[in-house]
Length: 135
Image 1 (cartoon, helix red, strand yellow):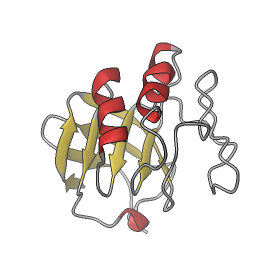
Image 2 (cartoon, one colour):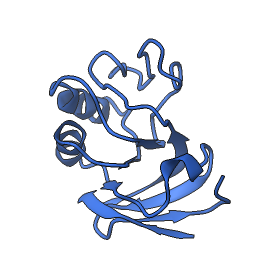
Image 3 (cartoon, rainbow, N blue to C red):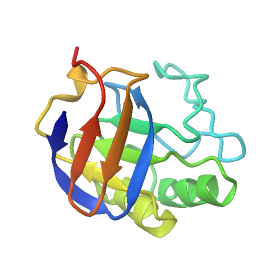
Image 4 (cartoon, helix red, strand yellow):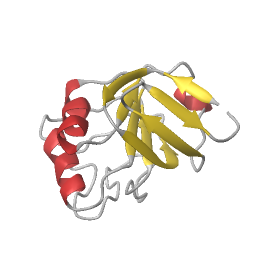
C-alpha cells in the first residue's frame, strides 16, 4: 500500500515501524548512546529506535533535541526514517542535518499504522510503502 504525505528530509529509509500516539522529546527522552527511549511515562519507554521507522505525532521539548538526533546518527543509533503527523522545526532540523528521511501529513491517521510492519519511506517524494494491513 502506498501512503502519501509531504517530504521533509530526503532519502530512502526502510525498517520496521515503531509507532507512538504520544509526542516524543529527544532531549532527555532518548539516550543518544544507545537509541533507547528513556522518557519517563512514555509508552515506548525501553524501546530502541535504532534502524526503526519512528512514527509519532510531533516532537516536544528543547531545540537541543535536533542535536540529540544528530548524535544518534553519529553514534549509529538513528532511526531509519521519521514519520510525523505534523513536522515541527526541532525534529525536521534534526532529520535534515542527520540525513534521516522524514515525511509528515500522511493520508492515513497514524493510529492505523501498526508497529512491526515493514515500510520504506521516501523523503524525496513524501511517500511510504506500507507492507502490511492497517489497524
